[in-house]
Image (cartoon, rainbow, N blue to C red):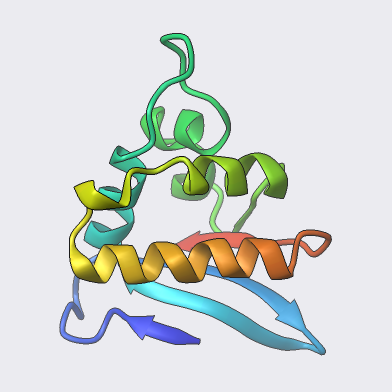
Length: 115
């Protein structure tokens, strides 16, 4: 697991992961980085879609953790639509890894866990 949580102990943590050969693979991060990434997703025709819908309504991983992403392809499209220039350096790095995780595991279950 890539760790972007070090130094933020005691604050909320987000993990995005899948399992490969029974091994947990993914990214753990301070929720502030994840919030920055999610805030960069724009509504479609004035409405929130896919992951941004759950994020903005505080549903999904907030109340059902760990929570399986319902549509990996839609999530991938949302993350790829983000204007990276609006993100800080660490959030850009995390976004790249989230996109890679979704691309490389499109047929696997991918989970978001909020702790």
